[in-house]
Image 1 (cartoon, rainbow, N blue to C red):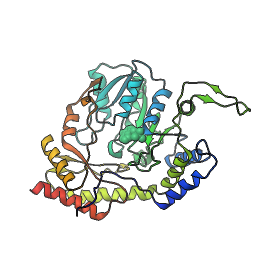
Image 2 (tube, protein in one colour; image 1 turned 135 degrees about the vertical axis):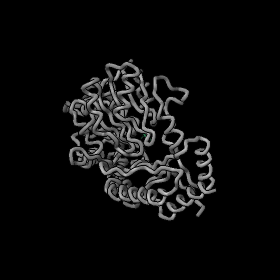
Image 3 (cartoon, rainbow, N blue to C red; image 1 turned 90 degrees about the horizontal axis):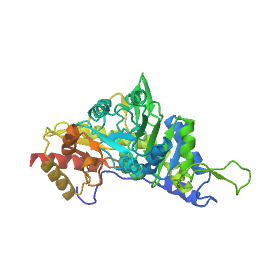
Image 4 (cartoon, helix red, strand yellow; image 1 turned 180 degrees about the vertical axis):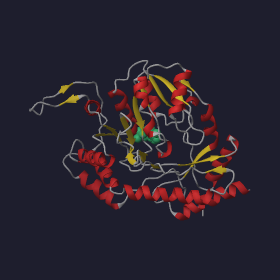
Length: 381
Ligand SMILES: Cc1ncc(COP(=O)(O)O)c(C=O)c1O
């Protein structure tokens, strides 16, 4: 099958979503109305967390988190080398000292051992924040970072932008990523390629009232309205405008109704790929782990023989056949603008050997088969 290009991800917007947004556009308040707080209420229930503050992107969610914990110049922040650039860029805006930890060879994720190695190698004593990122939506070790809070006085901020809808098992129960059972703050993105979308959009969750109140204020100019008079307000914090509009919240509310369907569909693709690709001896498929229910944001395979040249050939071959596979991610230390310290022993291996195949709600079976057949063809040429 050839024809239209298949991207590695895509949004799904149906007529119910369009109706919901159209209705919101007819309301008196396009922003600061009732739909944004309603969306936040539903998100709180879904994630089983005390406080939820929506905002206009996953990037601003990370900004709100770092600002709320009082990040300042020379504060130490640890994050994985395999990462989207947002948490790095924001930490840089605060003039923090950034340490990129090594990551797992297969998943590109930072483990607690990687954090410890980073602390040992660079002799770090006090750490302002540790920012794990659940690459692909698989919440590996989600319950195991909290111990650093005591040891290094560190805040744990989960960059859960890939993991909306993911949960992990801890002491027989499943906990939603975003419930902040094992983190101070979680951040999410509602970009079109994520589990649900609001166009652009983001979310910060926490169980800490003080942090939440700060986050809410920073989202809206640091303004505090306590007076009776409509014209009166105080500014108690330096803040910005990171608000989500009410018509974006309307889209989010409508998308949230479909979350189970979205997650099931992605899981089925994961299983179908695993079943059909497992016999290709040149690649390794991702493992299903019983201790977690991921969002399946990405489906990442590893080439067993690490060879960047072969991987680039594969990317070109797939593109020639209208399938866009993607690198998640180029390690941050490879960028010109990077200033910081890093460990890259396993990260280099991951970078050379990993690639993401298309996975999204409504990716038809026919296309999934086309992708599988192309991969088989590539390795038998
Ligand atoms: C891991 C991760 N963090 C942060 C972000 C930033 O989210 P947004 O694009 O909504 O600003 C993204 C977006 O792709 C991401 O993948």
